[in-house]
Image (cartoon, rainbow, N blue to C red; front, side, top):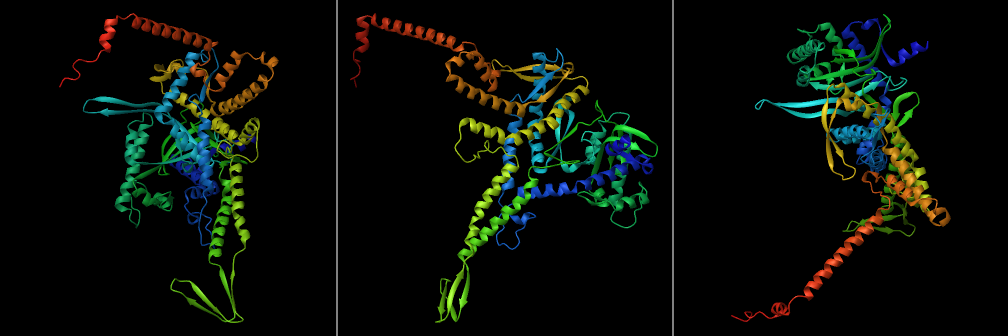
Length: 622
């Protein structure tokens, strides 16, 4: 019973209606629709958050201020978004050494080998734009609560036909962002890794023609045959797709009548989609199970085009059978893989802030031009300047009705709401310049920053564990799978800071170990240890008896490591003594040289000095 539940949860079930290859494509498309609808609530919230991030007033949001003449939007959500973006990346990558290779045998822990493999990824990240990809992923993570990334191997080159020369482009692993709107999966699966997933992308015919030239056997013929079918469908759409009966040369009329009712995202009807010259590609990754035959196919990679044709059906080309696609959520939902974002729970508070802001603005307008009550016989005349003159009878009166002044407390309520929103989003308040009230000692400030940043730190560590770590190790795997590999990488000499260039081969990448992103964890730990060490020194200095048990050399080594200066090798035992000796030696030489120069001037002949000091005889000549 447990096995049956697992198959239904983490497998794509194909019943007897989909035994043919193209029917399997239709079933994959049906699952795309099913899982797309399952995320509709998350997608609606994500769209609403985006509206607020880009809003200039409430007219462009779901919170249109009805009944108010003002439509001001206070961009608090956008400010929190900017704050998180500005702090997440420096927390993940605080230094150049934000990742570390941890070896599992003597060869892998060798310092030279470790520096070589670390230098390989650092070089590839710099060339491939890895930092920009992280920016895009953090944007998705904060905006929608979910981000997806894939890893592939690239080997780009161009051919100069005139010179018959090949120009080599980028060669190596590359991470790429996957739009959260272009991926669906079973949200009730045990984990994202085990969940069957479908990716959507669109290509032009020229792109697929170019790709056909790079595909090897045995898939090449199937690929070319499918490409021919796609061309025939588009030929029909251009020549006979303007309405009327579907009399086709290629696909059957019955088959296309069924698909004529389908709508395509961004294209409209099926015919409009064909006339766009774009081709929709759906890629399925996961286990497939046929409940009719009992056949179970684990770890499949199926590519379908136009939701009708199977282009490729093969085992997933990775060592463990799982695709190099990774996901991390900001806040996990219960029994749902679609996570919440940091801004979703703040939408209601943003509504309230805009409501108070526009209510306050309308109240100020009413104070300037308050409602008027006329009692008895009152005559109103308008002056040339536009003002009003009231002529009141003996029993008459004119009174203004100002609004309740307690509305002015809206500013205080807005400030409280905005402060609470920062707290609820897990923003690093003290680090971002927000200081809590009251006088505090240095130690108390450190404690508050550490405690206040626990949510922030937890989220960064989650990002590292679920996304960065598998991505780094996948980059090594795809490079190993590429076969023969040789490249030049850049290393930094820790002593001189000079750039060194070394050659790395595929054999250098076959070491037992893995990459660990230590940026956020290292940064938080170092901060805490550095503050504790400073506090300890303040206590020890006051007690000379205790001070003698803490060697200064050891303390210097500790601070060098905590401050991240060990790569510059600043620590040298009794280094200042040697510096002072060198300074005294240089000073003695300079003094001796100055004394020699003075002695030489004293011993100079009087006649020469008189000639040098005498006036120029030709000075007064015309």
